[in-house]
Image 1 (cartoon, rainbow, N blue to C red):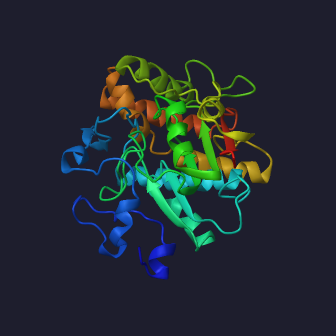
Image 2 (cartoon, one colour):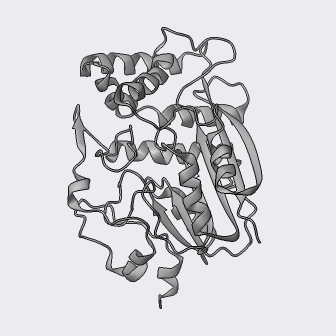
Image 3 (cartoon, rainbow, N blue to C red):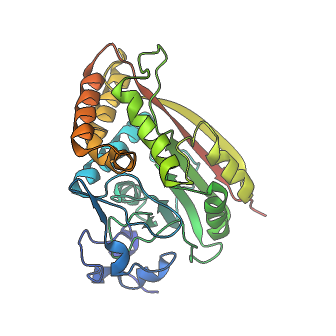
Length: 328
């Protein structure tokens, strides 16, 4: 396939428009590089809850957060938080200087894919997600991948907590499509806050935030786990798929500005901003549990106050896991 340098270097992302047929003609045949079945208008009919739009139930997975314009800002802030936590790095896998085809699983707004493409102008980066924020081109990563076998150099996955019913199957798809010697990396977190001093306790709104996901998942029969780090699902999935040379890095992310260390305080400031849209994050699960819009609003206001309280010290546990497909 012949492409211009500009086309070859650009991340393969859909235009941010509502018409699933209104694709970017400059991407041309790049659509053939995408996985799974193409998106029809029926699966772009998002659910509306309390004036917010949410992922439409389809396929084997379900995304619990809003997928509207307001939540896009949350996704971009989360990207900044995790980039700060990794000291500016976009990945920890030891990639070669020249990278070919890269897939960003759980691409969201595409911000990681764009940043990686800027850092590696020689690479072709394809965004891949469960909830189609860029509806024309981004397909569901839980469906069968139709990338060619042994064709990818790097598969990056991030913030899939509560979205993956079978981590082994997801990693097997990546394994099949990666070249021998190619790398996979997953950066994820548990879906709740902790504290070392007991300040995040039952009865606080910060504690209730995590309970929405745990109890809501049970209520709707969601098979995806919100205990990704605790249950070591990233490593177990990679091991089951056949990856070797597995490495891990644990990261404690402060949930607000409580740390004294300036760097950790900065991370906490952005982490707090990233969950400011509490209603968009919890309304789906809270509604399933019988909460009214007014009750959700009150809980969200209480949680914002608690996050500003210097005596409450929330953090969430994240983990980066990276591994390699055997060379032989």
